View 1 (cartoon, rainbow, N blue to C red):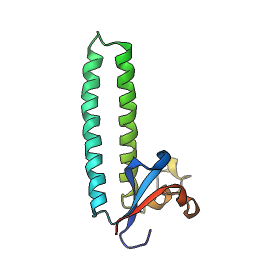
View 2: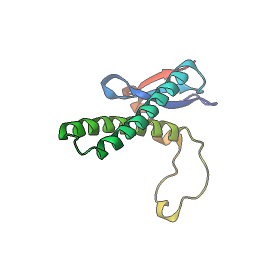
View 3: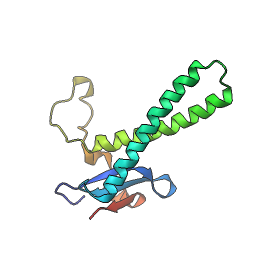
Length: 130
């Protein structure tokens, strides 16, 4: 990261070999907008899948194969939503407040702590939005 307002954003797709892909920029460029659009599609598909799951669970004629297929699609959707939550959470501003006593043994969560050390970054896909 180069300072200023540039941050590394976890993108909603994977790189080669399923490795995380990051975008470095200020969040206003073309690739950021593409990532936002893809996240929107993923969130919409997840909502539709939840509705479909509710319908299937109400249907007493649904087969085991149909439920397995549904579970597989739900696992995919959950993986997508988890990635979106991690990406957005890492971009939240850091607040400087004391954690609750039950969390006092943890280090403060900052966006930088969500990324690997400098010497391991070559294993990830990075894009620079300049």
